Length: 456
Image (cartoon, rainbow, N blue to C red; front, side, top):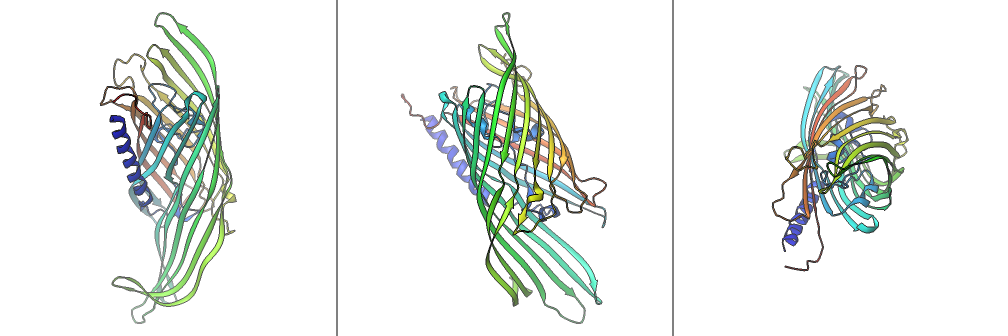
């Protein structure tokens, strides 16, 4: 009955997290979130974040010391599931925006739920697995004020935006010897609300304030594919220690097809005054409701390679180290919002990541079983607000910390994964640059669920 109680507790936690995820909006107030469908979150597992963002050629769950997590960026990895896994991720995000003209600095700190994912081995003997989950993709959150003089009066314009894009996904994977192929599909959905408020400031004449708002809801089905292929480069038997060393090379490829989101938009132009309980409408200049349209999301792809070393002993197979390189790109110039382009540019990024476990096969100490990770990335951001582009680079560090089992059976594994990312967007050619620090942590809990017990 212990497994049943643990299962119920974890499912309750998953339900709570789903509610929390759907009802939390980070108020980061970033001018970059004005463009496209908002500012993209770090849409990766915590493990990948600590390794510079590697996803295409990364896979875990094959070795005893790494544990098991859901790499939802490459669905081909689902075929390696050997137990049901619940994955939760959270991020503490700190950003500093620096403006040259006018001179200024703005800092925000936010707590953001990153993902909920569940991986299930459907047929372990045949290498068939699946995963499903929920995660936020983008966030729209900005409030920018501008003041100017017109005909002797001061005009204040306030630009505001809220909303974002979320994703529910489900994926399947199949493995044939050293080749794994999988896909994700599901539904992307969200909302974008933008307001432009204008107010004349005059000592002798009273003016009504005006507001132009556009509220757009959207959603659509997406499709992502992925594959991984692994080959053994060199295998060596060590008779003295009764171990087998193996050097392996893994190739990975992922791609997301161009997607059309069906959208419905409401446009309102009105005058108003500010009352005690909010805005009070005076007159509607124009109103249009349920305007149908589409939002075109661009295709993206990633390709990577990972070299890693494992050691096999009577205790199992353990990964000693791995190093990987990846390239990813997205065609953001093809983005369209109701057939209108935005200030976006094609983005690309190079990523380098490493993972090291000092001595996992001996089992002599806790810290020798920890997976230490680091990474580096550089590239070009998708936002092109001033026409000069935004360079982007950063470093990352992290660790996979095994949590000691509180019961003496072998079918439960819990790993606490952490990641610290420090990076910058923009350079001396940009008027606004951004420094950011993100601390992410996630829990991967694996167990044998939904199995009928033979004995109580």
